[in-house]
Length: 442
Image (cartoon, rainbow, N blue to C red; front, side):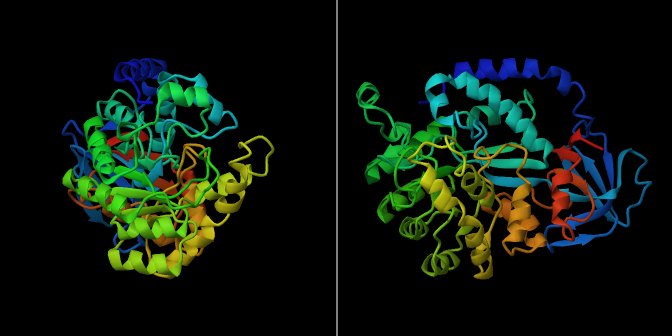
């Protein structure tokens, strides 16, 4: 079901009103007025080298980093400053796989029938702010009709949140992971009718092209396909292939016409291989990734976004009676537990890895725990941090964020301690700047 724009606008505007007391205390400082702001950092994470360097001073003006001065000169221009000398500064992080309009709970499956789009829009406002305050200044929302509208509200300054690349409705095949009518009874199915490309469901090459063009019409920034079954969809298989290679190619070729990149949800080996062969930019989850798939990914330069957090979360919740429907529970127990091992294996085999959590499965604002899980999987802390900074920018195809350098967006976060030496430090972010605006400071 597509979200009515008018309803969403009302929801978001009303949500802003409810947040005004908190918003009155932030942003704490603004540099986009032309007045420079100086950040004195005790250490900086250099995303290019993956090293933590010593003291540096960042001069921010008009939403951009104007100067980066080694040595931490405390007297630069005598402008307004923020003292972060006992902290490590880093480029703002990017989570490449979130769902901003929802959050998993035992009620998730019934809420789709009981709640209105405005309810999900209200919720997304709080989720967006939690994500930003955790240090994530950018996200890629891979599926949800709320996200393009939330993106616009954030860009207009109506609500606080990360910069959003929104996929809008994911593209599936009939009965596939993103078929919006999975689990409907006969009466509802006959009333609604079979979903088609407008609703993101395809069964031919023409359908594939039409679905991408509809996402363009809806204002999406990126395309997502569900190349295999999924864990949380109301369907039996979590890994069966659900697109042909030709269907994937039709999506990718049409997406290229509009300057879109394509992300592919994939758990099963065959569907994953087809998605990579068809030219997608990234594989999401990748649970049953084989040597054959990894070899092709390296040949084609395909990115892997593991979402270890989501795997751990659903495997844990599968142990709780009643948390998931019976058709979902065995998939969550079986598939979720494997993703962390796959991430470690992919890293050791030289697959390019970028950061994503599938947050919305787990609680928004806890995104940084993915770093901890990546390190547990055998990925070095520096590589994990790069995956959410400079590497995430490469996946998005942008060249003005992901590192602390002159001319880059002034997306800066800070935390006590050294995250390369102690990855748990990522859970203690207490300074957040996006586009030169300070939203949180110690």
